Image (cartoon, rainbow, N blue to C red):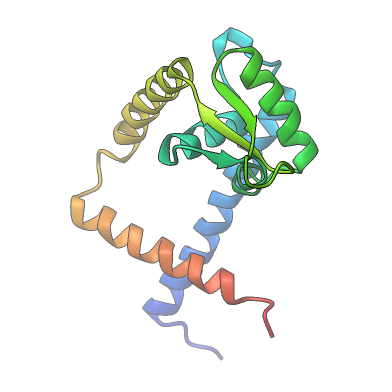
Amino acid sequence: MTVTTDREAILEELRSSFGELLGAERRLRGRDQHRKAREGGELSHHQIRALFHLAKEPEVTAGCLAKNAELSPASMTAMLDQLEDWGFVERRRSAEDRRQVLVTLTDEGREKMQAKRAKWNETFLAALGEHSDDELAAAVRVMRTIGGFLDTLGRD
């Protein structure tokens, strides 16, 4: 007969909740595929990720954006076509390497991203409002540990 310790039970609950989190993220991505472009003025999950990434860097390659958004280069090109048509990004060829396309956020894109981030932060804060700062700090440490663990898998 196997005796389960409290720690083992907690770790099993953590594994289970992590799986639920991954499932929720997959469902979010799935909803993106079924939503029409700019339906109700909303951007897709991938478009938002691209804009958030562009807000951190003054200029990013399209390839870097594709990798960050977990999209193929062809899908990223199509997305950038839309974002450029809507006035949210600008593209230009790199002077150093003409094969590279550099993407920047326009003022309109920055405004859209900031409005989306403010709304997202409000919703995120409301969802996590019941948790103390210590609990949230512990969650950050645990998620980073899990991310580091996942990065080590399959490297053997």
